[in-house]
Image (tube, rainbow, N blue to C red; front, side):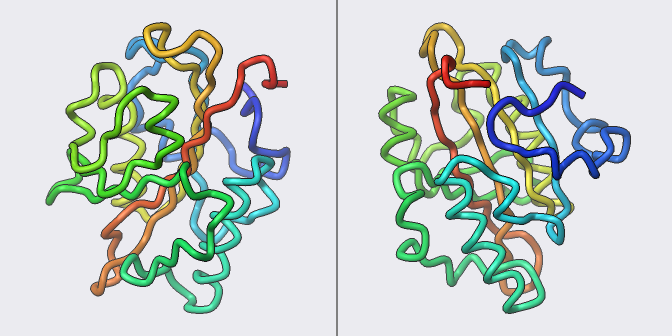
Length: 197
């Protein structure tokens, strides 16, 4: 496996590629047009803030893990508190799946994400993105919904958007009243490719 280039530390080496369910369900990112795409699903009980280097991801993971540990289950989406993730605000996206998790509605599209992407997707469906995004991201988000796992992914922006930006995305499941995944909270951070090490 190509190591995650920015955010995941060596602690995730305990998640073998061959057992990562995302590997079995993802379309080939290279055929979908994403450059230097790397991704990994993380069982919800193995999500740990110390895995993440970017402060926005660490902040969101700290909040999510604190709620998970306090409740002994996935945090409820109805009680998501933005005041607890202030360093991540602007990079937060809230998504809701349709009935069969084949599409996702952006309830919130962070202001920093919108600025770097060039448009605000709040109130729009993931499927309204230009290709190749919908194919790849739907596969990742669908796994979050169906299995309650976290997903971490990175890819270089398509040239039409930016030649210097790399997107680093952490998607975490949030539960509805029935305990199933009702919403995703995603922290999507753009970084300069020169800072990728």
